[in-house]
Image (cartoon, rainbow, N blue to C red; front, side, top):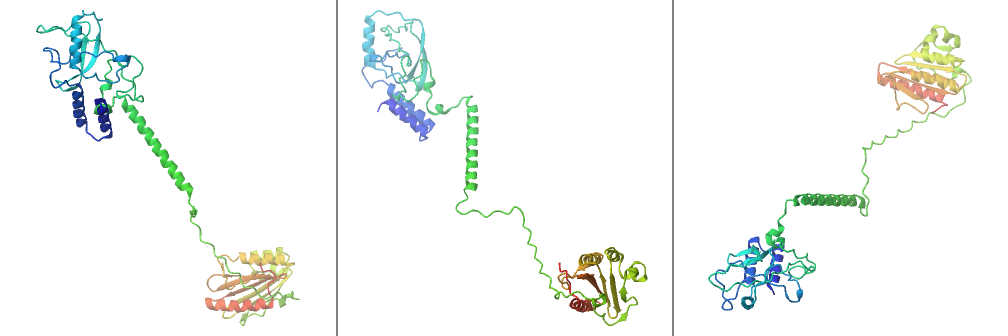
Length: 400
């Protein structure tokens, strides 16, 4: 394995983080020192007064091939002696006046790299009467021909640096140093990485919520559902309908025991229009009867443990009779429906105390039942008994 391969492996170990920067520099300096060091003894003694950094440049390799290594080859003391003797026999050729920069290894100073400016057109001064130093042919630039590849001959590596370019000397920890212009690149890289992560999170979220699995998740209620409204039970049916009565007095049952009212008896249109008996009906109900075509009526009241009132008016048809019964129910302001005592077509109203009232229609008659007492229980009992008797006597024909 050549020293170039060992240097390549050393770079790879540093890049992999298996060695530290100080260990890398130490091993690199030792490796370069071994590759550039002289023989142990005897081939050619070092000339006194020769500058430590003044090694001659190497000529072009045989065959015109470019030397692939960025470092100068090892100094051969035997070849230098032979070549120096040949140069002593030949006259010196004038060299063009130019300057070149050569990177050489200085084993004496234990430096990794050094830069020396050599004036090719000038002779080195002779010291202590020694024979003149031979002039070596200038080594052509490393990048004068086609790209010779990396120092290790890998064609995939970037081309060798041009003559005078010392950027190739950046090895070890220096390779990872970043210039001032890299901050912008870091910012762009960070933004790009953040955008990629954000897109990944969004895609994962969409996939998670849209996949759903084999079983569909139960729908989430958007709002609190109101409890179902209980369906009221239907009202009980009253007794079956009967044929229409022959006369108005036959519509009502006999009043309960008690003191009879002076206005008890038949009612006609003149009595309801302009007489004291007009007070047996409140104005909304009386007006509905008179405007609807009142034919006749009958009034019955008794005052006992409870006050009981039975009243009926005959109208031209059931529709007119329904208008009178509805006017009576609408006039019961402050009263509420008692479903426990109501029937289909017979809506019972109560104050919650001792007053119970209702109105219904049988054929062309509007029938009113009204019971009141000081005691609520007594009023409810008296009303229920009187209503059941009246429904049995004249059942309703409109049961909506």
